[in-house]
Length: 410
Image (tube, rainbow, N blue to C red; front, side, top):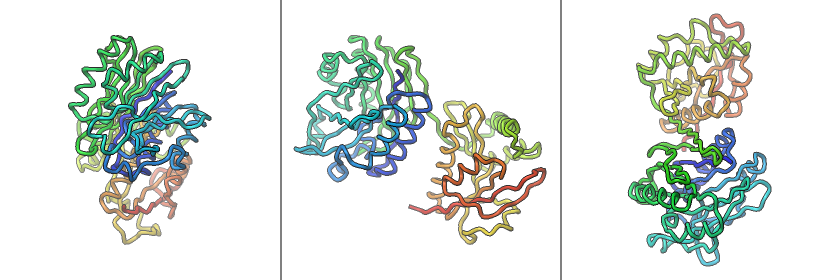
């Protein structure tokens, strides 16, 4: 079976935004054929004890229905972090969604002294059966307590998963503790940690997998969101820890080759959107020099790129835009290397562009899309971009749709 460990950055108390982010991670895990995905401690609210009472929910809250729906459809088990209401108080819980089954809850049984003013302990150890593997889960502090692991092994757990929110000193303890325990009990241990601000500390990621010999197989970094997928049969690990950053001139040749690959792929599908004169190496170089080209990377591998600026094509003057007097951001030359297409990366770049527009007080986004590229047109329409008119560019037989989306600032 394949277990996915998600390393996420949650917004303080913003349940809806965090749910949307979780669902994107689940989609990524599904595309990598994961059977089970686990998120960090209190991942839906972020680790915020002061807000726990206000944000706590019942297990059956309808806000979590999208998780059950995606679970039923794709046969994947999902574990998310959430404070839940109990008879005697609030518990730190993992809500677990399994295909066509009633939701279950595992609540943290051993609390740190700092948590006692806010939470009460859970009572039962949860063991999941997935593809003939027995999986025990633990939440943060208790995962470093030998007693908790012993209780899991008494139930014949094959794998132990720690869902945590840990700063550097906590991660240092985990990296000392988990290898020893994994080796002693011949049990693989997986840890999902978050990144970014939590309560009064910074969580430092480094989500990881240790095999039954206590060997560190793979880990994520300390700053970025990502996923790590562990194959229990082969012990192979896949990492998808993509991030978006400004492109650098030393990336020019790699980037230009990706644009060429994109052009060839389009033409192989009968779409003559780009020409030998567009986009050129010099155009990409100017984008890099002007600081408007952002690249999506996984490690050192460039997956795709997007140019975002206020520069508009002269042909746009003829279009009857709805937000004509507003501050406008324009998207140019979105590309995903063909070998990485259909994995959600274009959506990730567009999410970035729209967030950039929101944070920089733009009122709308404009772009143009080749009218014969039906898949791309549908992609933008689903994101609420509306066609305002058509323009023609040299050496293209068909027009481009000029599309626009209003940006509503938070």
